[in-house]
Image (cartoon, rainbow, N blue to C red; front, side):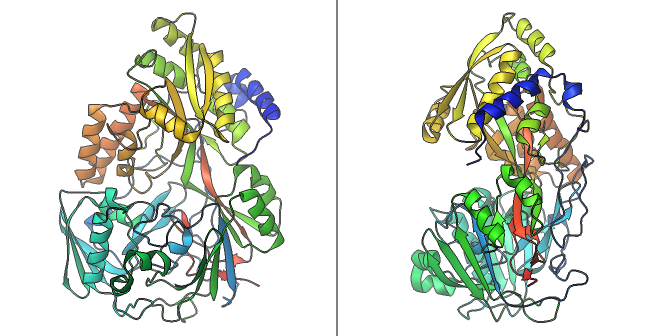
Length: 576
């Protein structure tokens, strides 16, 4: 995927790194941010830059209002049209339709707003700061009577597709299953739960093992600890196999058919509990078809032809094609995007066991040049690892380790390498990693790192990196701190499952522990800012550019909104 003509790219890369920073950035602001394009129907206005502000107080500390209709449910000047079939594609197939056991939690057909509902979900507040708030889904309201207790009141009259009732004990059973099932993909973020109880049919009480300021947001995050609610009655009849292949939820769509490695077909739930802007039950659509198209370039052809309405995870190389087609629209979701060239170092072996060498390597990254070559007009230089703009801990006063090849050479000389130092950079043998690796090789070699590129098959790369048989390696990171900075624990804590370079810092661990247990948002911001500062000063990791998550759609797709990174299907309608 992500094909680029290598010769053309390298010519561009060489010219980019050869230019002085001031010349390379004549068209760029001093502190660029990914620009969030306003999805159809969203209220927030896009902005090229975002102020660094701490997020608002956690919603866990206050009662919540019932969920409101999604922004843009009824666009001005357009009468909602009911009916029709929406066809969507993504380049992953459904491994299972059991939302607790699936390894790909962000497939739209098995998410909230389609087959299922969550207790709570995320809704964008401000595209400038990437802020999201928690709103009710199956929960009418909630409160936090103490630091380790959350009590939810459920909406009444909600039924599953099999006719069984949504009750407190069913919700409690769902969370305990998601926490305890040996194959659960949700358990890592649900281990904070001590007990889940149902005092009555419309109440669910969570007792946590310790104060946890991130818990509410984690369970609202569908790709994290979010636990879509399945029918307990259906599971008792058919077990895990039934949940995997004949799913039963409460969502606006019901299961109709699944063709393995081809498509999922859902039909309208006529008994859905939410009404649309026209006063009638949602959804507006009659049917949803989720297609598996492994090549997004092929999917784009179908989108242009009109046989596809929504293409998720558009390749960045295809942005110009979408923008140049008057029948198509592009939604940019920077808060759910990726950092390209997230590089880590083996801090236990020379030369990167010396912080000066790590700092030099970070200062040798020409982020502006990389963005010119790889940003395709939607990327932006990014300095702060996987920290999203406006998240707790994000602050532009933190050291950036900006591009400075002269300073990099001085640091190398001070570390005992006045004539430079030979290093290896291990790269996964695929695109865009190969091309990014060649860019990094050019940058680092100019600054005194004689870089040998070692391209490896993915599983071999994992084995070598896990065995610490590397000097430098890189991967692509994903923004999740707009949910909560605690989502980074697996990536930056000692022994974290996603801490690929395996650095260990007791100060980082301690501040992460304090941050998740601290309920005061200002104190949390200061703690996570301390984490980011420590990571930057020690240069354990470095980043190049940030790319937004890209969604392409035909312009007749109206009323679209997003649950963090997933399209909500319930209020989409087709203007045709």
